Length: 166
Image (tube, rainbow, N blue to C red; front, side, top):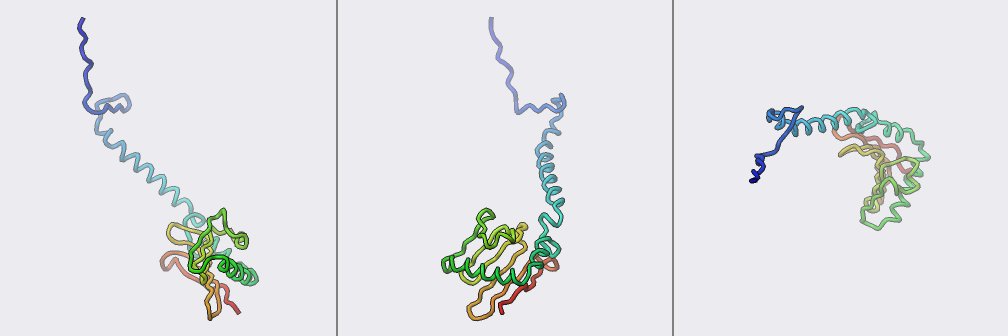
């Protein structure tokens, strides 16, 4: 009794709805999957609306920053001075949302960045490569200020001075 070897396959076998002869459909399968994934991501990003990935003047974070009373902005400046005093001179430090310094927690920022001893940035919202920021400038010989900035490019970007040191 002699055994015949099993026939060897040439290339992968793709079965689509029980039909093994439709190889052109098999070649489209991967590009269709990639398209479906990219389409799904696009729909998800577009459906976020102004509360999602939009950081323009109409975003809720801009409205929230504009509604801060002058007393809170003055305290925010003092809090920034204290945060800078704790940081080493010339060193850039950041904190993620879980470690936002307690004096900034009521603003619900994404993070707080310190750039040496002259600037603190409170990231109210981060949108891809731009965002809504409270820029706290601590000049040496001039008055300090808090500036709200938003957006990426004109006409959707801008800034507004919210507070100046007396």
